[in-house]
Image 1: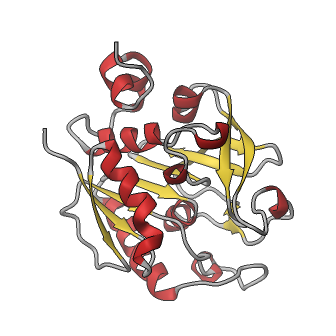
Image 2: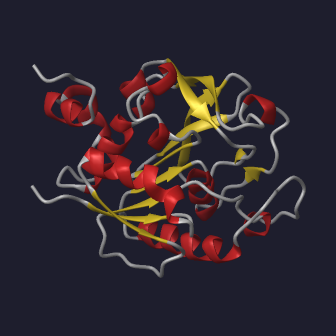
Image 3: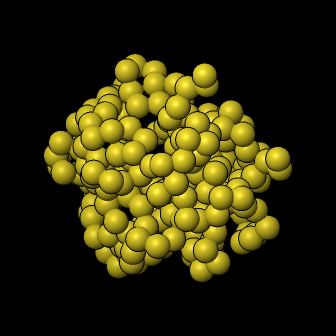
Length: 242
């Protein structure tokens, strides 16, 4: 079976991109990692990775809590996200990537969470609990409550067009979302760093496997089969090999 080719937009510093590349490859895909690339719809899916804050001007606000931004990356990734959305191609946003995808769909962000200390430790990421909406993709993959790693100070505020929040931290911060009709998903944590459930967290690999299934022959109507199709559930890592 042909490996899905994933356009991955990420950091200038290649070493920061390695966990994302490894995650796509371990899930069975081919990652093409580029910084601020031009729009290219020849790929099977788009992975928007973590990084700097999204400039608040892009959602109609002045700076009040936003930290370092990257205008070149913002411009390129917004164009890519909107093109992939327009053509109905799968997009997976992680941390900054989830925030940018929401902004591309007309949403806004909390520029600096009042509970940032619960989401970002001074020395790096920490773990916290997440509650998933019953019947959502994240609920299907991980059940109603699970642990994730966390390193962020911004989050979704106003959901963009069609964005459906499906997971929240204990303080109400949106931690994951789907789209009401398009093959789009975003998570606020870093599944690429916890592929196998390190530290007691929910393993990130099923999310990447699901995204690659979305980018492959299964097409965009995949969430319902995840709930009932053993082959898809095995592909996503939900079922063990017998």
